[in-house]
Length: 203
View (tube, one colour):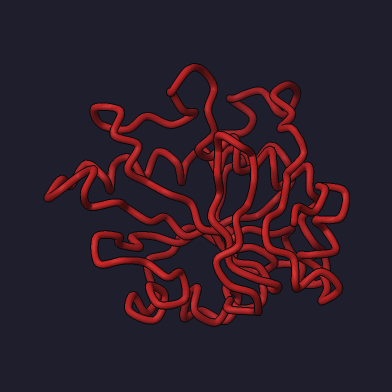
């Protein structure tokens, strides 16, 4: 079952669509936003979020595309060593856990329910509307520390998009890796290496 992007804000904000499985995102908007130099000037880490304000469907689609979408044939908005593309994005909201399918622009459900408590040890991570988990496929980058560099490029894309869109964000490395792996249903060759919390800043 696919839920049209128009209803995604309800999925994030409330329990009405908690049974949804896959979510079809709106087509990402690839024009507009702040000039690069202004976005860089406004890039910052945010740790206080408006817990009552959901991230709109279009904004979420734009965010994920900016982070790790395809911008040309088999190439992405962030680089990866030897084009291995070993990083996957997992999305945790109050309603469920999803993987981001960049080719189809779809969120595929991994689990229903609120697992934000597993996204990080900091209280704000457990109440913000969105946590993104960066998962490395060790079969694509066995023993390769470049996966951390590749992940960092995606992190910065998210920071810059958030600065442009009026969102707040902070990257984090403090989480229970074993618990998070279980929530994300990772196999032994997958590893969560960073998380990033996103939401509108508290006023």
